[in-house]
Image (tube, rainbow, N blue to C red):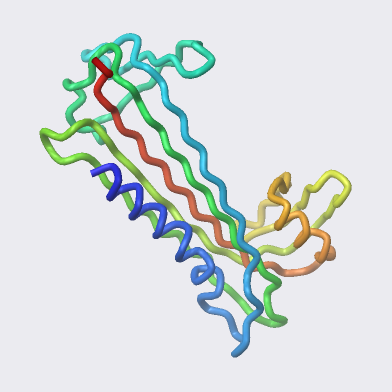
Length: 195
């Protein structure tokens, strides 16, 4: 189930991202988006399980205890045992492109989720993709930060870490409009302890 879920989330989040960025564009030959993606995975060992509160305490590579509250979306909680491994997989992708002059992009968010079948090992996953057009309000290419105002009319400042997005940042000017699409996917599964 996890391999299928992970593949579905990955393909939905990463492969469709450039298409999300271009939906609703007004020009017949749109500029291709700049896309950056990253994947992180963490594996931790289950140290304690509290069925009453649906919490587990895990220890990751740093051996520090961390308490996780597992809601009802994590099916088959009663199968989790001390010594089991919890694997958390996170993927993020961002696509950006200069908005064609005079174009408008209505903001849109798509969300999906999946969870383990009854009786299977505990697992769950979720993915979300958002697209919107933003207006650049400030740039700091020395520190790789950009400020912008989106559809909510709230100014945000973000640090740009991906080299391909840093290169895109250097092409911008205050007042530019940029089409942005962001996709995130997270999956968690519990694996039995090695015996």
